[in-house]
Structures are given as structure tokens and as C-alpha cells.
Amino acid sequence: MKRTLLHKETLILLAFLGAILLFPALFQILISFIYSFWNVQPGPIMSNIIYLTPNLAMLGIALWFLHLDQWSFSAIGATAKKILPGFLFAVLSLVGLYVILPIGTALFFEPKSLYVSAQVIDLDYTLSFLSTWVVAGVCIAFMAWGYLMNKTYSVISEKTPDFWRKIITVIFVSVFFTLLHVIRYQIAKSTPIEMGSVAFVFAYCIFCSYMYLRTQNLFVPAFMQAAYAFPPLGLTVGGRLVLRSVGFIVPLLLLFAFIILLTETYGSWGKLLEFQKEDQKEEEVESS
Image (cartoon, rainbow, N blue to C red; front, side):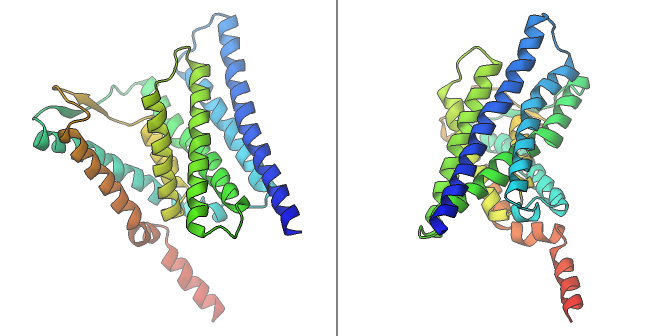
């Protein structure tokens, strides 16, 4: 009986993977074909619609499978009270990015080798920011961490130690996430994607998976994914900065250490913003 149930859950997982690979790509290809056929150059609004369509398709598929498995939003860490601490987590990480890297490269490499640059805030910037931070990041998080990660973990045999179940799950989700990224890139652009970019996406997905597992807040990887896809400010190389030099690697490691510190202390500051203590007190009063 247990083996039959596990087999069924595995088939559901495979169906989800097939749907995620097929339908968003079809929507993206269809819209691109329509614009190419009519020889129309999309403006800022339509460009963001084209960008969001595959993401909304992924969200729809993830929500349907969540409903199929009868999983609530609270089961995957996606309740409304988690939005604020998830957003604040990404903002603090960006503050670390724009402070630690420029100052660190100035200390360990040379002054003015890396500095923060503001972008022009126009209609295109505003639409891209809203579509990425409000929609795209959340859609991707529901697909990758909300459903796929929890489903993959559930189909792995319970005889496997919990630590290795999580390791296998994270690697599987990261491989699939990277594959999906490569497919969408190849559809959108004719040039082949660089292996360095593929490796970075894979590593970033592993890091986001770690943050999700430690915080149990789906909006942490959602907003961190948005921060990666569309950072509000830029970092400009002002001098001869070598990425493999100690002057860049040390500040980068300090940045990762800062984000890890935010992750590991989330139980203190993040849960406070979720008003979890107040909820627990209300439950104690009701039970008494």
C-alpha cells in the first residue's frame, strides 16, 4: 500500500515537471512568434507581459498541483504574514551587497574599483521592477521551492536519513531550475548561454534552497530571486578589477557570510515580524 502511494506521488511529480517544461515554453514561443510574424517591436508594457506570461503559467501550474495534493499555503511557508520579513530579508541582503562589496574592494584591492551606480527611473524601469519583484519572483518561488522542493522531498524514501533527503532534494531542484533557465534563455535569445552563467544559476538556486529550508518562508527565495533578476541599483567597475583576485573574493565571501547570518538569525528577527509570538499567545488563551 505504501509503495503504491509512493509510486502515485512520483507520477504526480513527473507530471508536474513535464507541465513546467512544456506549457510556459509554449506560451513564450507563441507570443514571440506572433510579434515576429507581424514584425512588431513590443514596447515597455508588452515586453513585460511577454516576460511575465511564462512565469504566470508556472504559477498556475504550481497552484493547481498544490490544490491536487491538498497543500495549504501555510504548509509551504507562503502565508501573508511572511511577506514583510521575506521582503526585508532581500532588502538587507541588497544593502550588504551595495556596502560590503564596494568598501571591501576598496580595502583589499584599490579605491574606486567598484561603486554603486543609480539607474534611470522611467516607465521601463518601473514596469520591470514591479513585474520582477511583485510577480515573477513569487511565481518562480511557488514553482521551484513551494511545490517542487516539497514534493521531491516527500517522494524520497523515508528510510533515507533526513539530511540526505534534503541534499538530494536541493540538488534535484537546482538541476531542474538551471535546465529551465537554459531553455527559456535559448527561446528568448539565439546566442548560446555561457557555462559560467549556468554554473552561477545552479549555485544561486542551491543558496536560495538553503535559505528556504532554514527560514521556512517562501518569500525569502522569492524576493532574493527578484533581487538577482532585477537589482534596483547597479555596480559599476571603475578600475581594473580582477574577479579572481583576493580583493574581490574576500568581500564576496563577507557578503555571503552576512546573508548566512541573516538566514541563521531569522528565527529571532523574522519570526518576530511574522507576529508568531502573538499568535501563540492567542492560541494559549483560547485553549485555556
